[in-house]
Image 1 (cartoon, rainbow over the protein chains, first blue to last red):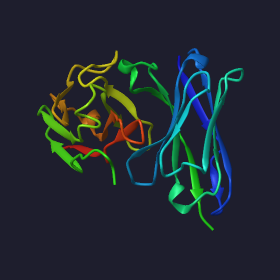
Image 2 (cartoon, helix red, strand yellow; image 1 turned 90 degrees about the horizontal axis):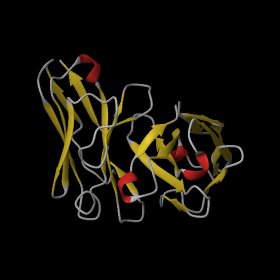
Image 3 (tube, rainbow over the protein chains, first blue to last red; image 1 turned 180 degrees about the horizontal axis):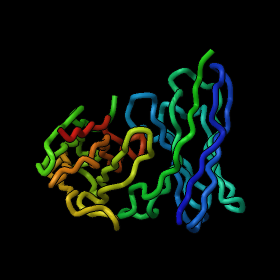
Image 4 (cartoon, chains in turn red, cyan; image 1 turned 180 degrees about the vertical axis):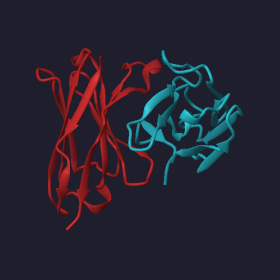
Amino acid sequence: EVQLLESGGGLIQPGGSLRLSCVASGFTFSSSAMNWVRQAPGKGLEWVSNIIGSGGSTNYADSVKGRFTISRDNSKNTLYLQMDSLRAEDTAVYYCAKRYENTPRGRYFDYWGQGTLVTVSS
Amino acid sequence: QSALTQPASVSGSPGQSITISCTGTSSDIGGYNSVSWYQQPPGKAPKVMIFEVSNRPSGVPDRFSGSKSGNTASLTISGLQAEDEADYYCSSYSSSSTPFVFGAGTKVTVL
């Protein structure tokens, strides 16, 4: 059974930093492209970042570029999101999501974690 | 502002059919057959219901179907059931600065 378990969320002041983790199980993590998707309270889904299986290529939404860093440790089956210079508008539930496969027919997310809430407030 | 446009809400009675539209551009929906739909019950994580425009993952009832015409994709729920009440999001691969874009979501209410 595929499982994605996020952790690391919490209350942080504006300008602060936080690192989210997502522990994966039930599939070959090192072969899977992984994503972070967030959802502000009462709002829709927003894609944040992705990383290929090897970790050699990453992408970011314009809203977080230069402030967030995605990484992975395939030996620990763990995905990370380092969030720096946090702003109030970064307040959201952050989901890690597995991309089905890194091919044109695999451009969707087949498994999602339960999410971790990040609240940026003074 | 979301990249894809969805109606805020759609409602129907049990047994009826409803359709949710999702409009994008030639850079996303119109340019790729990579449209997916996600169901999100209140307080829960999203779950994929349709991928590649019209394909259903194993376990998704065949009451759910998807289609696309030009820059607009659609999700149809036939034989609406109470358990279908949830928010539904469309998504597409995109050639813009972000590889994946979402709609703002549509709240489906079963009357």
